Length: 131
Image (tube, rainbow, N blue to C red; front, top):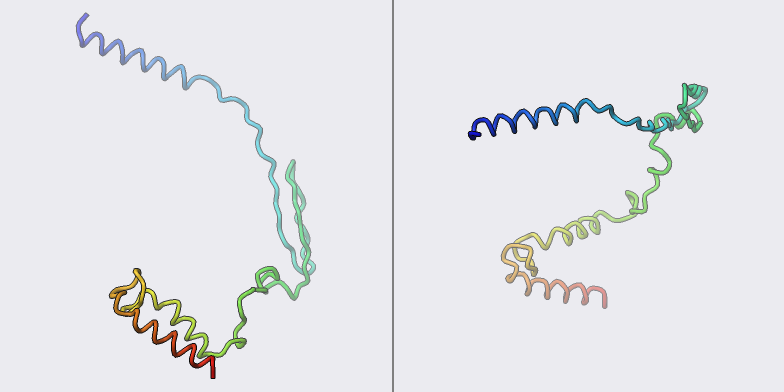
């Protein structure tokens, strides 16, 4: 048997095997149940369930239709106006300081040069709070 005949036999066997694998019917799978969860406002009616569908509706007043949902309205962060503008700028400045030149960190460029400046800032802050 030559190599050509052996290769042709292998090719035919693989084609027959793949055809038999495709011919097997797929097993019956249970389809997941369909659940619709929605919020209706004002006098809007909740849609009817069709077939084995489950529909869950929450009714809210019409005045809430175009508002941010209550669970997203409340934030634990400070609201605007509760902090002075200078302290907001100072906190942003502190947050950005490690990435700037002259910082005393391994993250920023020229990190070694900012260590003396950091010591001086700390000294001035301590002096300001003592007065």
